[in-house]
Each structure stands twice: as structure tokens, then as C-alpha cells.
Length: 153
Image (cartoon, rainbow, N blue to C red; front, side):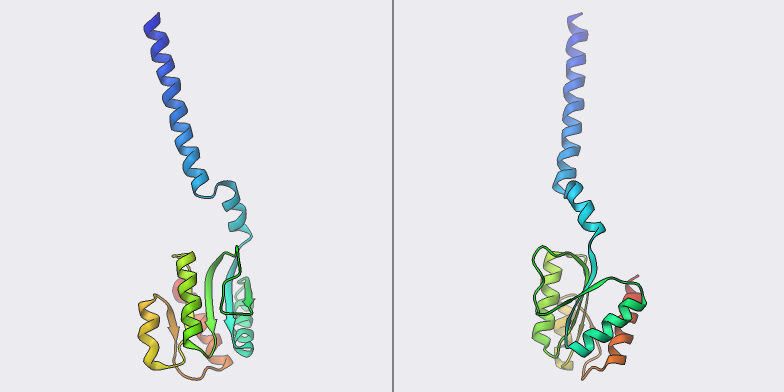
């Protein structure tokens, strides 16, 4: 009788341990809060020259992708994005924004306009997809964003 009681108690303890381990892993991964945050997450953060941001936004709207414009080359606090598009006329700002996005979300897709062809290797080293170098225009930005989204899916 005592042996049966000991075996039953050991089973209950092991079962409780297994349940708690699974619960700990679930909570470490964000638990219920992560699920709610993922559902409400804006897909793309777009930063840069107003005309170019508008062109990218039109393309994203046409494709049914939610997006948010950033007024500066910084990622808003407590934000979460699946992708970042940097379209400023400064390679330094574009790279800084995309690198920060990759730090926060390693799986985030990033696209930046490369203004100086000599800096193209910097984008590749940072894991950032760069669009053609040179002075961008709205049509080129729309084509680059659409190609980028189609190639990533």
C-alpha cells in the first residue's frame, strides 16, 4: 500500500513539473500578451523623404499592407514591426534605422534606398536589402517596394 502511494505521489510531482516547465516556456515567449501584440502589430515602418514615403505608402496600401510613417530615423518605443523601409537621402540614417530594426527583430525584413553606390556593400553587410543607388523618384520607390515584398514572400 505504501509503495502504491509513493508511486502515485511521484507521478503527480512529475506531472506538475512538466506542466510548470511548459508554462514557463510559454510565459518566456510572451505568453498571452505576445499573442495580442502580434495581432495588433503594424506590418511596416516607413521612414524618409515625404514624397518617397507617400509613394511607398501608396504601394503598401494597394497591396493591403498596414504601415506607419516614422517622423525620425528612430523606432518608436514599444513598437513592433514585421518590416522597415528607409527612404531618406542619407545612407547613414537608412542604415542606422535598418540595423536597429534587425537588433530588435532579427527576422524583420528591411529595405533601404542606397543613395551612394559606393555604400552598397554596407547594406549587404548589415543584411539590408538595398534598392538601386542614385536619386530616387516615386515610381522607382514603388517598383522597389513591390519587388521587395514579392521576393520576400
